[in-house]
Length: 352
Ligand code: NAD
Ligand code: DAU
Image (tube, rainbow, N blue to C red; front, side, top):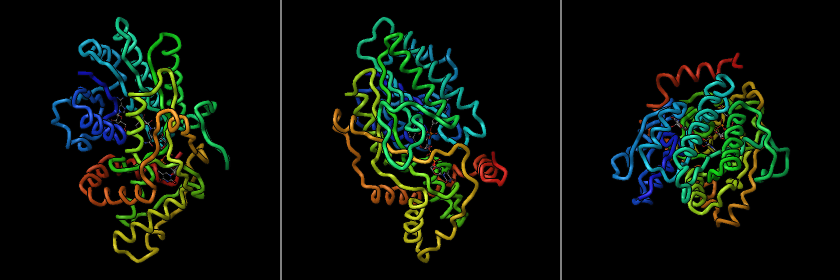
């Protein structure tokens, strides 16, 4: 029986990954280590919480002593590290949390793995989950490849870039077996409604304004979350140690076009007059340092590991909208309390 430590498993992507691994690999013991910040939610995992091969540990990766002890008490064979502060807007208003979790937390895990694995490194793997935002912003053409130079612009992407460099440095300096993947924007169920797609679904449902940053011309490459977790599964089991893999949907949308698709679909689902959701679109002050375009070249992953996205965007967005409409309680629970305070501050006129 192998023991796999997954960090950040109560968050959006992490909960999809935990579900996949717990169900697909009954011979793995999965430890989910999560601090349960505002973005972590055990309600994301109720279907597998009693599985015999699953254990939840509520701790902070910034607590280095605890992480060391966790490695001493358990024979951990692999780490898949997703725990992070993940929202760009929050990194602009509160960068320090990002430095602590994304950089210091990652180094704590690297140190614990290096120490814990020193006598038996064979078969071990430290898999770091990263983002395409480390590469910066593209012009109208071109794609990010695994060799594109890092050029992060937000405290979030700079902290992720820093963690990527540290992970590689532990491979090059100490021989730690690592692999890194950098993925584009994910969408799907269980995403905290601070991110564009669930936020706009929630606002349309409640007839609230849709705050589009700048002119809505920025471009993102959207990937259905289960296609990301399928790629993580492949890379974890078949990826080459020391390598980086880019993961993307080959699915670019300007924000405004994407928002129009959400509006049209919501009008139909909610039985509202065609065009009524679009009237909620409100152009607001742009995000500071807003990257214009992301687009991933995932041909290395496609050619070497035979991965490709399984869902067309039209199918994925329909599935996603249905999920948020069918999981009203989940959405209501995460949009009360602190969320209201965050929303008021983030979308006030004098933000930044
Ligand atoms: P998320 O914000 O939904 O979840 C993050 C999880 O990490 C939460 O459960 C939170 O409680 C936990 N966490 C935060 N700080 C912690 C700490 N100090 N100790 C322990 N746990 C902590 O994030 P997500 O969107 O699921 O992203 C997961 C990972 O994937 C991140 O590393 C992110 O950078 C990366 N990523 C995300 C996307 C995307 O589109 N969402 C795309 C590419 C890469
Ligand atoms: O590219 C991968 C990254 O995608 C991940 O690393 C991040 O963790 C994840 O949050 C996401 O970052 P983005 O900044 O691209 O995602 P977000 O959903 O915040 O914004 C998507 C686009 O929509 C972006 O151009 C900003 C714009 N936007 C966002 C919000 C929340 C708006 O116009 N209005 C909004 O209210």
